[in-house]
Amino acid sequence: MPHSLWTRLMGVFLGVIVVGVVVMIISVRLSTADQLRRRVLSDDVAQANALAPLLSSFYSQQGNWNGVEAFLASAPTATSATPSTGGMMGPGMMGPGMMGNWQQWVQVARTTGPTAERVVLLDASGKVIADTGRASTGEIHLPEHLKNGVPITLNRQSVGTILVGSMIEPVLNPADEDFLNSVNFSILITSLVVGLLALIFGSLLFRQITSPLRALSQSAEAIAGGELGQRVEVRSEDEIGRVAQSFNRMAESLAQSDVQRRHIIADIAHELRTPLTVIQGNLEALMDGVYELTPENVASVHRQTMVLSRLVADLRDLALAEAGQLQLERKPLSLWEVIAQVGESLEAQAHGKGVTLKFEKPDTLPQVKADEQRMAQVLFNLISNALRHTSSGGTITTSAELRDGRVVVSVRDTGMGIAPEDLPHVFERFYRADHSRTRATGGSRLGLTIAKQIVEAHGGQIWAQSWLGAGSTFAFSLPLSGPNIPRTAPQPKHICPRCGQVTESDWRLCAYCGAELL
Image 1 (tube, rainbow, N blue to C red):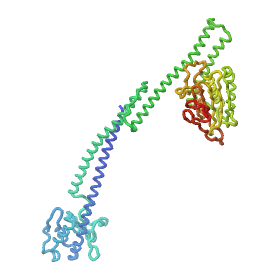
Image 2: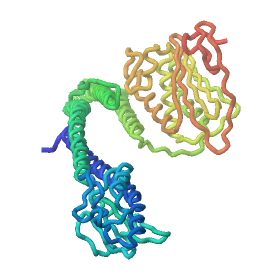
Image 3: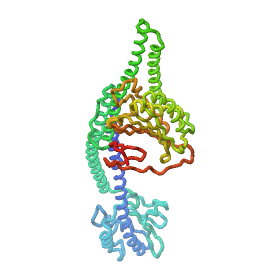
Image 4: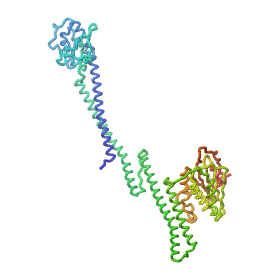
């Protein structure tokens, strides 16, 4: 069974605490021990420097180092505050100049403290001639050892070297070792207490992290199981809270997509059902002899098959466009030629409905790089949509112009317009603003959606404006082709005299209230 995130975090955190405590104890011990050794060494060097003149005076009076062991034995040490003659030194053994040795030692002790337990005296050749710590008399010290000692000079000539305490062996005395151990014990206790507190607070912090993640995991599993209404509670505004918010937005998007998918399936089924029902009914009537096999009856079935064919083609184009797989054969293209061709193909339909098609040709119109067939499909869908929503006697005007480095094509009609609440949805698949329209007059309801996908695939934009009772305008823009793209000055704006809103000058009516612009 895999360990939980909380367990792994606590394990890592505990490991960091243990390593930190060990490293801190070791580093503090080493640092403290080094500092103690430096202090002790400094004291010993000071004592050696204080003893060197006394020993130099001894050598000057004696002429040699005979009797120096007794002289050193008389010094007060850290463990003995009284002079020790060791039975080796008495008034008779020293000259009149050496009778005050005790007073000399007392003066040194007042300056540097009691002399260390071990003092080693070397002659000029490095031979041990006196050692108060152990019997090392007669040993020869290497030259590299002599560098730690303090030289004893007489008449600017070295007559020996003195080594005191840690100058001989860099070790701590028992008192310093006890102090170092007490410091380490205090650090250990403090580290354990701090580590325990850190572990407790870390556990609480990790639980605050893992608890929302656990809730996210459970909600994700629920959504994977089909419960798209599942949401998580947002408890903070930090990174975890933002993840929860993003998760909820994702869940909401999935829920909306699922609803949209269901609606699409229902719409497709509905769009297919009616023509199939008509075809089935007509064929059964022909088979049963209810209808005669006349060109008119066959044409009725043929029209329904054309509706199905157009719906299937529209669905295929829409699926390819939304998947980014719509094949485009781009080449320099004159949009006005495409407009003229589409207008000519729809002229008969417009005439039959009593609608006038007008085309406002500009003086010059640069070429765009686009797919000719797809642009014809866009224009056909826009003009056909205008025809379906324009009553007899109305007018549909198609125009094109150069605006700020882009070609803008507009299709304006004089129909009843689109309600403001419906206008944002006109480019959605299967959306029909006028729900009273039938399939015969309303088409597959995919034309505007396909037009939007094709225009955006060319790097353009498409939009709609409408005014109830005054008509609608559908327009799209495409970037120009070629390296030298002409640009025009921005279009002037007009302020509506009725509502005060700003509308571009190319619109005849206010985009907000439908009032006529001056």
